Structure formats: C-alpha cells, structure tokens
Length: 71
Image (cartoon, rainbow, N blue to C red; front, top):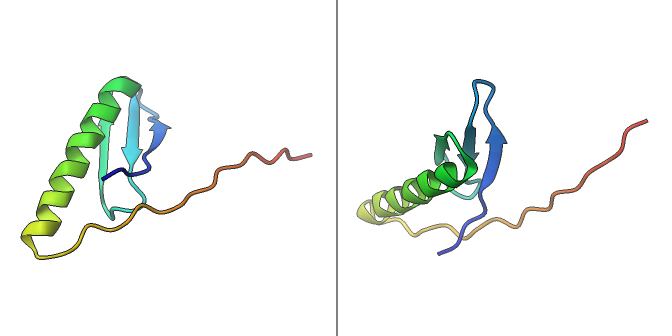
C-alpha cells in the first residue's frame, strides 16, 4: 500500500510526520530521510495492528496542496 505522508519541521529541530489516512499515525526524526524511514515503520505497524483487529486498511486520501499569496 502507498500512503501520503506530510512532513513538518519540528520546533525543537528535526521533523515530524503524519499520515492523514491513518488516524494517530505519527513519527519523527532528526533528518527528512530518518523521518521517512521512521514513518514507514509506523505505517507498517499501524497496518499490522488494524489487520489483527480484523479491520481493513483504509485507502489513501487525495490531498491537494496549494499556496495562496496574501496581500
């Protein structure tokens, strides 16, 4: 499965990531590469937990990002 991941800069340094399609699926890391590796593990663990509860893995949400220039 493939999921959209949103990376955020952490105030204390490094990054944190969230997966909008998977409720409460978050991770963090010192670099973007480490954060992406960590969130991949979090996604896999989340999916294993869902399957063990007899639940189906949700489909990825379609997200649209845009920039709006304010006056």
